Amino acid sequence: MALYIFSDAHLGAGPPEKEQLKLKRIDQLVAMVRTDGDRLVILGDLFDFWFEYKRAIPKENLDIIMTLRDLVKDGVTVDYISGNHDFWMDDFFQNQIGVAVHCDALDIEYGGKKLHLIHGDGLAPADKGYRVLKRVLRNRLCIWLYRKLPPDFAIALAKRVSGSSREYTARRDHHFAVDYENYAKSKIDEGYDVVAIGHLHLPVFTQFERGIYINTGDFINHFSYARMDESGIELQYLSDGEDR
Image 1 (cartoon, rainbow, N blue to C red):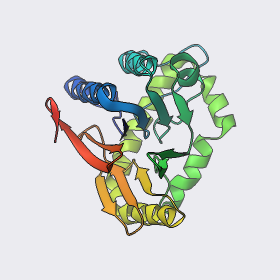
Image 2 (image 1 turned 90 degrees about the vertical axis):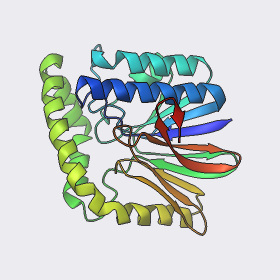
Image 3 (image 1 turned 180 degrees about the vertical axis):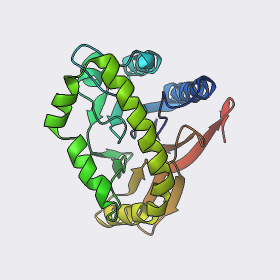
Image 4 (image 1 turned 180 degrees about the horizontal axis):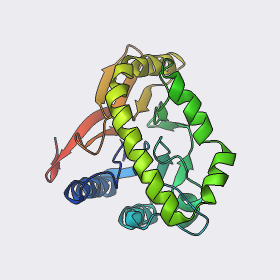
């Protein structure tokens, strides 16, 4: 059996034809998981925006929600590590579809190896402005206040802000790629065998002396993902009908 990891689809961010391509690639990945996988980890930013009211969720995400629900019903363990575009998650995924949500990092053992899995926003020490903003946005009071806004208004507003944030971080975060590698090496030095990070939208496979750092890239342009089985972990890519 195999573990699959992917991130950064930012569903809802692109024109209709791009969104259809993203969903097609996700369907391809899910089909592979059904064939030989027993665990799927979503490493954040599956959605370009996600916010849960107590009785409302963004309706355009219904297809992917049903896909994940069916995967769980088929016996696959699905974990969701929230990113910087979908961190306002409550209990919907856990209670309604059986997907475990992790608000920061996830440490697991798989195939006898220790894995550290994290989306990665705010990891760069020099990114002080975002590190402060991250604390503000994830503050329970801020979330409570935002939930008081009418859903139609609040979701539309958040999507505009999310788009601006994505464009800003896309221009900036590649400058911090070395910080992500240093972070991965520090976790490997702590005893982890594999460190998987998202957020950069940049596929990376680095073999250190004691372990491996993988950045899962994105499901926008690269359609890259990690696959791990008893033989090890690899960075792979999806194309029409097959991986390459």
